[in-house]
Structures are given as C-alpha cells and as structure tokens.
Image (tube, rainbow, N blue to C red; front, side):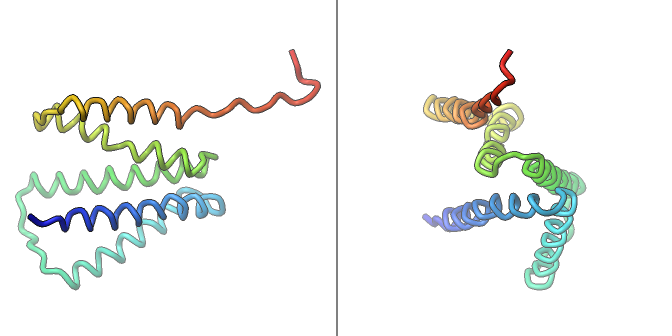
Length: 150
C-alpha cells in the first residue's frame, strides 16, 4: 500500500499554512484585487511550467472540461473573497481557519450528490468542526470608551 498521497497532502498543508500569512501581509499593503491578480499571475506561471514539463492528455469529454473549469473558477472566486476578507480587517488566524472548513461543504455535497455515507464518528467530527468555527468567529466586544456610557 502506498501513502504518497499523505506526503502531497502534507506539503499542501505547509504551503497553505504559510499562504494565510503571506496573503494577510499583502492585503495589509495592497488591495485585495491587486493581491488576487498577483496570485493569478503566479498560477499562470505554475501552469506554464506544468505544460512544458508534464505530458498532458488534452482530449477530454466536454463534461470533464466544464467540471474542471468550474472547479478552477470556484477556487479563484474563493481566493478573491478570502483576500477581501483579510483586507476588510479579518485576522489571518480567524479568516484562514474559517475558510479552511470548506471540506464541510465538500462532505455535504459528497453525501447529497455522490451518495457517500458518513459514520457516527465522522458526524461527531463535523459537529465539532462547526462548534470550532462558531467559537473562532466570536470576537470579544471592544471596551467602552470613557464618557460614552449610556
């Protein structure tokens, strides 16, 4: 049994973990739109390297093409809105943690569309993730300024 997927998932975890900080640093200094454009340029550069170094099988059924295109579009829109959340004052530790719960939606769609089954343990994990999202999103109230009491 091979576990190469664990290696790649671990590398993705490191990349995306660092990304949250770099995105916040960027959106502190430039607009979310400009930050997104630089993100897109980086994706184009990576895509060009792949096109030049990996043998591609370009002939796919139209449905597969449109599914891949929809996935890329949704990923791009998710990145853009995450940059906007960071630029709008969201703390990186909270914004990135909340948006990283997107697998909950993936699980819901997998159950509804792909008819996958969840175990009780997985259900508990989902419930705990929802509780964690709620707890992470709670911001302490700002202290009242002196003289502004009602």
